Length: 532
Image 1 (cartoon, rainbow, N blue to C red):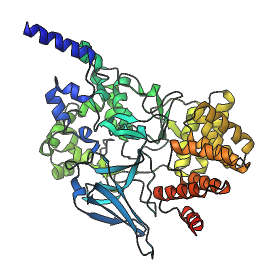
Image 2 (image 1 turned 60 degrees about the horizontal axis):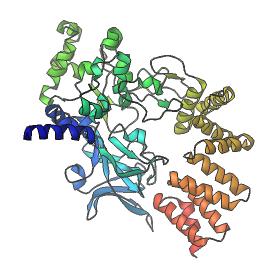
Image 3 (image 1 turned 90 degrees about the vertical axis):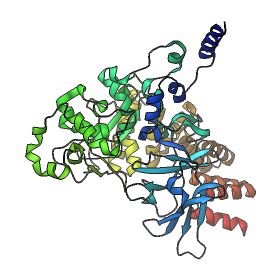
Image 4 (image 1 turned 90 degrees about the horizontal axis):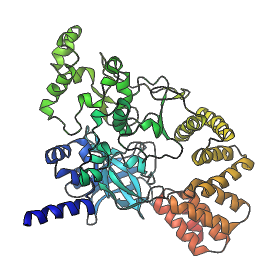
């Protein structure tokens, strides 16, 4: 009777409160779960605590490339932090932010995140394993001031964490904690587990899927291309295991970029290899990698050599006897060496193009190169226009901007431009001084999607120009509720407050702008004038 009661209780619990997340898998797959937690994918993010502190435990400093600011990391009574201090100034600019999360397994590097009013940003400091030192985070070296407003978007975070608690309708606000699993969770590759736990329905085994669906599981994070454009109605969170990534997004690469190595270009580089071209769909990431296991350092050479010998023979390397004598039987050391990448300083990654003779440098394609869909095919005007628009704004590339403008005009004329395409088109019209086209487009975008903060910010500027200060204040407050890091919008908001006699609100707005960007001199000057 007791056994029957326990059995019925188990059935009831399984149907009434199905566990969620990787912990639910651990009960039946304990060995795989424990092994996976030791892999880089099992350690890609987390809350900063004593166990994850690593190099943060000891105070360390470095200077920016311009020598204008010193950055430090360490620990204080409130926890772990980074700070900055202006050098050589009579009244130096300085500040401190507490760090809440880390991202990156630490195999190559580890970055850090901080929160402001629930909005998540990337810290400008990163620990690099190869040099065992701190330096500017990737993409921050070009700034000669403390850049504190790089938002952590859901699409970025999802390749480092799972079960993300993003707050819809904002750019980068998250509930606490920002994510429930600091790893690539089991369900990210095997699909949702609730039905499996409740009824025994089989989970997805990537190796048993058709090639396109199988490869899409890895490509969701290891194929970034030059830019990834979600299809209309899709976003970075739309992909589910068992589907095709190409049905959710188009990944664009630059034509002629066969020699480019980037942090997440594993799929692109593998596609260029003679091994992949000869093997076709037979070869995929799982041919050489078991995502649940990472071989010990002492076993890596023999582990991957065994993978190579499933297709190749030792005699194939006779022409490279000198290399074999230098590296022994380590195939990877010769044909997949660790090399610098073009998009991040201070790190090296394995070259997955598997060349006969390793390539020492990574070639960056010219800014005139065409953007084309990865793996061939064509792209509609809407998709290609968005690709050129995104890269143009990222790189300040005038050639791409002109291409984007023409393509988005074409998409709008065809009726295929969605809210995202219309938003970029409105911006391009405004930059050309064509307000007669820009204003109605911004109005349409804001009506279609109230989370388009750039449209609200632009409409606020038009309202200000027309003397409608209250409307401008309303629109700018709406925009800042979605993306609070727009300091130029805060400056304009403060000016609107001043013109309506709301001095206290203007001062608070300017102070908030300086909290977000201490180097914003125009806000500092205006605040000084108010306080005189």
